[in-house]
Amino acid sequence: MIEGKVYRVAGPVVVAEEMKNAKMFDVALIGEMNLMGEIIGLKGERATIQVYEETGGVGIGDKVISAGHPLSVELAPGLLGAIYDGIQRPLDVLKSKVGDFIARGVTAPAIDRTKQWDFVPTAKVGDTVTGGDILGVVNETQIFQHKIMVPPGVAGKIIDITGGKAKVEDTIASIETPAGRKDLQMLQRWPVRVGRPFAEKMQPTIPMLTGQRVLDTFFPVAKGGTACVPGPFGSGKTVIQHQLSKWADTDVIIFVGCGERGNEIAAVLMEFPELKDPKTGRPLMERTILVANTSNMPFAAREASIYTGITMAEYYRDMGYNVALQADSTSRWAEALREISGRLEEMPGEEGYPAYLTSRLASFYERAGSVKVIGSEDRTGSLTLIGAVSPPGGDFSEPVTQGTLRTTKVFWALDAPLAYKRHFPAIHWLNSYSLYLDDVKEWWEKNVGWNWKLTRDSAMALLQKEAELEEIVRLVGVDALGDKDRFLLECTRSIREDFLYQNAYHDVDTYCSASKQYHMLRTIMDFHELGKKALEEGRGLNQILSLPCRREIVKLRFVEEARFEDVVKALGESMQHQFDNMGVV
Image (cartoon, rainbow, N blue to C red; front, side, top):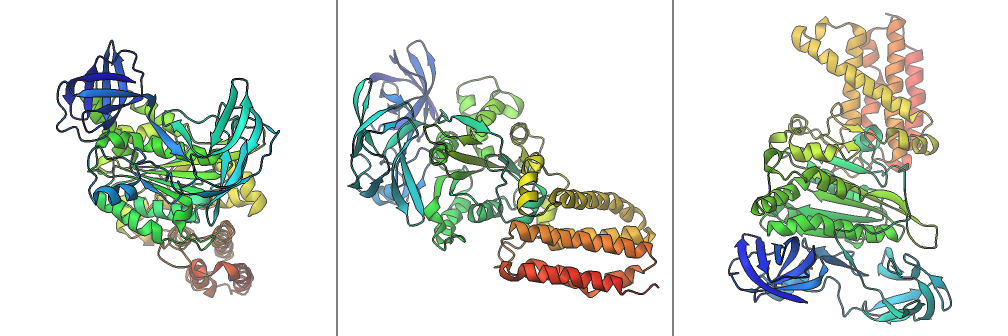
């Protein structure tokens, strides 16, 4: 342990002297209140410390202690259902200690040291294990099995393993290593700025289904992929985050509220515990971790919050689970980075952000992936990163949005005019893109529909043609268009209003399975093909648009999953029959 003293204070940045032999990124405790910080710069015997709490009252000469270890998170049973701040302090425990407002210098263990867990060994005495191997399991919640793993970098032969009730710090197994006997506990610690190791990173090929038609069908993200959700104020970022948390087909959800307004985070904290997991009927919090760091909390902790969240996500990925992390929003994280950079008197880059903003964003998103985990077992897991961005004034050319787009492979562009029209999700179909289309094509065509990609591309082509026709309509009016173009506009209106639009608060429409999505879009495209052919054969436009099947297409999104297959099959037969029996006008 190294003890120095304060030399200078500049907001959340403290410079300490007499810190010889201190190490970068080690935790430091400042002043009589032991305010927590992290060493982010070393020059001679002086250390620059980023303090995660308000530094008011800290003066020249106050003591500074280097803890001798980097900023780390605790990993053990008990994480799921917890609500932490940006440096993994449990907010419910802090509230019981000091009330509704967190006092400076107050801390608490991230994991309950008194709770006993029922540990069931799966390994046995005599087994040779290495980092990542599973020693046993614990039922962390009623719906989730927590796998107790050998810490990375540890290997040897099991000489003792004990099942039954145990606390996270109790010894559950002992192994013989080349360096001697080593006792293992359920509790692990891992530095937040270092990615947990894996054996191999694989190409993501399985889509992360969200139940949102515009995302899954038009702009899918793969499990282990990365996505960016930029949008101006009021465009629906938070509602989309809630929908993804509730419906994404992942095992664990980690939601990082990074610098958002306090009322938004409060809404999340109130709503999430009440949400039901649609797959199990249990509370969604039983497979969710919340990291809350609001805009009125110390902004330095905001910078650490996304690393706290992603380290916990990697831990569950290493168990072989599919994990989704949502950061809302990385713009606030970047603002904290800019603030700290200014205090350090670094040369500013574009719009005052530090020159290393893009590289920091890239290093964060690169921790996503579908991987083969370490260990002697053949086990895979995935970590999907979805970052919301709040560009000032909805300007997608600003540095945080552009830096994120250079790294992520999916762009869900939220559009304010769409939101004002009450079109949800307000994702603009012409501005968005996904680079995973070819990667997930095989899964969709094997499990859902053989011509999924063709159907999706045909619908996108119609929407692009609609944008061109709308320019003409604005100039000379819709009456100047021929029947073929007017029919196309009616079909694209159906794509927009009957497929892309989705009501998050409707019991049925809030979620749409992959099969239902495909058959809904396929039905609209079949209507387009049949109508186009009918026009060529001399049928009238009004005659086509008045067919009963058109009204039935509108109702498809409200049909329950249990009877959708029968309904859409009957509609397809009825639609063909109606077109076959049309007379020539």
